[in-house]
Length: 161
Ligand SMILES: [Ca+2]
Ligand SMILES: [Ca+2]
Ligand SMILES: [Ca+2]
Image (cartoon, helix red, strand yellow):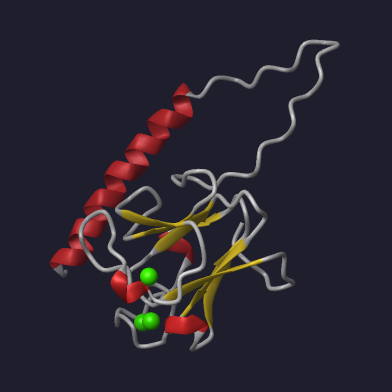
């Protein structure tokens, strides 16, 4: 097993353990008191991604990340929080758009090469939902392939939720 793959799997185990604890600690949702107006619903928020951003992750959701506020034509000049380059190196993504934009990820820079996958507002795609042929950046399968991000309004293209 490669060092990179091992590091990813080790990190994922920790992330899963942490999320299980968070799940147990979550309080039951309280019903609004009678006569109190329901609050205006907030924009949907994807996991591990600040409001208004489109977030990409090195391995599992919540791992080393880079947050995009707008479309980005070239991932080769962007770094993850672990210092690695974003290009051909992301395994999962989350969408916390406040403007209702879908995140569309493409195989090549400048939205070229076809769509790798897309994520709806408030949604996310976990690494387990993406395919991988174990060759980075060869235009085949989905992990370690995305090279640009285009924000689009609501489309008819099926995206991850
Ligand atoms: Ca960039
Ligand atoms: Ca690529
Ligand atoms: Ca590949």
